[in-house]
Length: 479
Ligand code: C2O
Ligand code: CU
Ligand code: CU
Image 1 (cartoon, rainbow, N blue to C red):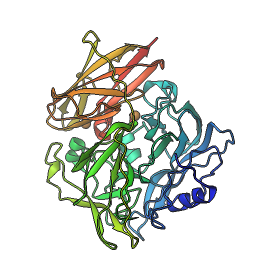
Image 2 (tube, rainbow, N blue to C red):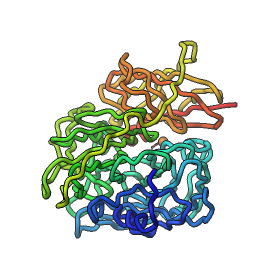
Image 3 (tube, helix red, strand yellow):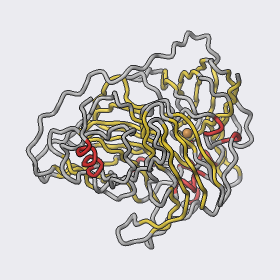
Image 4 (spheres, rainbow, N blue to C red):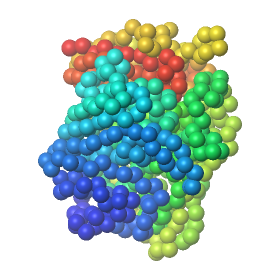
């Protein structure tokens, strides 16, 4: 870990587009050192950071308010949105591993909501979802309180009418840092979303996409990176970019490609993976996170376009044209010598499964009820479901079978799992996941070990329209 002076810390905050008002007290983890990046390199992808109002070193105490606001997705055109603290994405909650987090939340929306902490191992009554939590009514407040035990990029969003509320702009990131992690390059968090924008700047109302929207979920006509359309990062040739990515879209699968460049995946749902994996493209399903390293190659002034490639997840979703997601411009600075990436990034202890573990079978299906689609798990549609059961300390294997002819991104609340096989094949890498694609007509098996957090935990398809149309279930974890 290199030591960072206060000046370069402040500079890094400015360069990272944090506005410098992130309440930097000396207990916060140092920001990644981006002082060698071109000035203003990430100005077009700003993310506000929540101010920590508690001076204690291991407590992060913040205030969040859900409210209606106006943003300009298209420059000069106002769009009414629902926000956390007035921005889309909402502000980032920054903490370090082991911190206690206190969130004073107030709902100023015209309807009830909750905050669910996607990927954080919080107590069930803090999870903001399912039968365990009651919704926070308009004008009401609630304090969320939990410890953040794992490093990585996570996110938060409502779990009430999530298809509508998330689409309107209610999502934000949680970055939990481990000060011992290696510096992987100029680091920035990029939140990927899409919205259906009409000519007058308004968001197309939910349901206006008709049967196709029910079937495949809401896919927008406008791609957003940190709430911006096709922003540009400034980078130095040869100097690695370390991007933390999260897909917050209702339904879109992001499928990134960077012509002329390799993508090195270094992290996933729960921070760094054991070893870097090089690839030509990256698929990120709704809810999922990835950390990647990309080393820009080119001459000053060159524009490298990060493209979103079509991906067929059923019903012709792969027929779209490739689109520009964002770009990287090579700055007018001498190229840097590219450092070697560590070949080992972290360790993931395997969940040992000897075949005697109970198997939870979960079948994803769809039916047509008159003109309305219903999505189901084991033949039942939320909220009329019979919970699966498990005991604290137990290891279970889940077999998720997708009986439909489209992909579904499966998400389990509260616990990370290890995928054992997809259609019979083991994944290339052992890693902790909470959101994973289950291919059309495919089968996926994962192992999960339940730590001591009893209660009701949801699992569901993260295509939010599918979830709200029934594809949600509940696990009852007992002591
Ligand atoms: Cu992002 Cu119930 O999940
Ligand atoms: Cu979740
Ligand atoms: Cu689905």
